[in-house]
Image 1 (cartoon, helix red, strand yellow):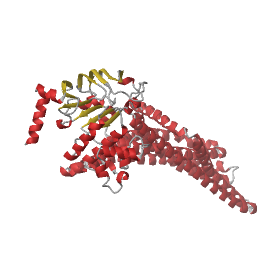
Image 2 (cartoon, rainbow, N blue to C red; image 1 turned 60 degrees about the vertical axis):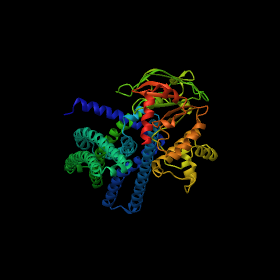
Image 3 (cartoon, rainbow, N blue to C red; image 1 turned 90 degrees about the vertical axis):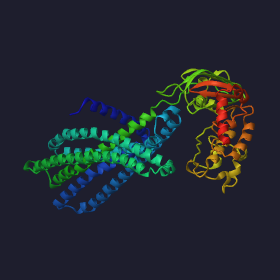
Image 4 (cartoon, rainbow, N blue to C red; image 1 turned 180 degrees about the horizontal axis):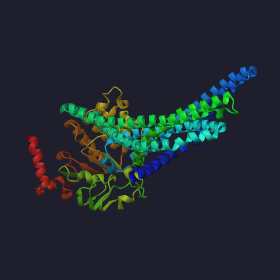
Length: 587
């Protein structure tokens, strides 16, 4: 019995499918050429049965001298038309499927790069990858394969039925009595197809996520001897996916033979009626052959039409996943104010901020930073340092208070323009597949090689780049795994130097450098921070002694601020941190 929720799910499913079809209808010319090809293909079936009946009647009448020449010609013409129609329709639908996949992937990419940071905080990367790969593939099947079968086999059924109607409309209507029963079985199967397809997508996303984590964390897995645990976890996820696949196949392989049996029973009854003496009255043997041939050939296209239901339901389930992502609200960018270059004056006025469903990470922070000042943020992990600097490029939106850049609220700046004013080097360095040169000039490929080289030299990265066989053209590989942590960090610093923005954020930018590299970086930073507003997060206090202002944070609150000397003289939190670090280093 169909429940109200099933009916609601079915209605929503077809709304999603209509939305998907909008991507298909966008290519009207390809659709029309495909439809034309399938019309020719579908018409060739009844034409072949008609040719067979005409040839038989010509032989029976013993006047087949003319038919002896015409019949082979018609045979070849029908075969040529069927082949041409099949090619035109099939190629057009394949082209259409690739266009839909391409457009969806591009839209997903545009959406992903435009989503706020908070979205990625709550999403697993492997599941997002699964959407762009597996789910898009399922949509392509629904958009092309299903339409191909619907057009090709649907038109074939229509042409055969029209042929049967012309011969005997009463018998044909008798055959169509089975249509509601077939429709009921297909409708019932649709509910299960969509449910199992959705569960398959979830389990496939889980498999992708585990695989992605396994590849990235292979060293950790081996170090902690977690191979068996990872294998068991993947096996469990894969088993769930296999189980859902088998449920889908069980539904498909039950419904299809059932429909076939019902159609066969209808055809058998039709043949029994057609072989009655009344049917032969006034009809030639050729017409009898045409009728039986058309009735018998109806079974295959009807069977294929029922089988596309599984493809459609998988596409609908995938559409739900894809459109859910595409409908995610993009990063807020309502600001209109733009500047060529800011002075770099920042002011935090009683700023409160919390991540989703968590206690406040910042509690009434107030801070004034003059242009060209270097501000160091120190404190325990979780004290709010990174949260504070993440508000500057508007990766997150503060809940209360105001953040002003050159006297203008950050939210009033056009987002792209705001981020042009900021260079950022984070603790977790991200390098992309490509050359060292492309990574340093990331986001702006128009920098000259001289400018790229100068930035690399300023970050003391040429020290190791010059030793590489390809120099600046060396490919860094996936996630720059062939480079050391210090080398990756120096490339990230070179990238920030090349951008040359008035605001610089260094989040543990020297954390992965050895002592010698750090010494050179400190010299480079002394030049870099001149006339530039700089925020530095550092756990090693030796790296921030020259900062104009040192801000000590704890539990989202600023508890101390001043110069290195001033804070030491106060004998407060900073002085205790300094004493603890240097006493440990002396041991």
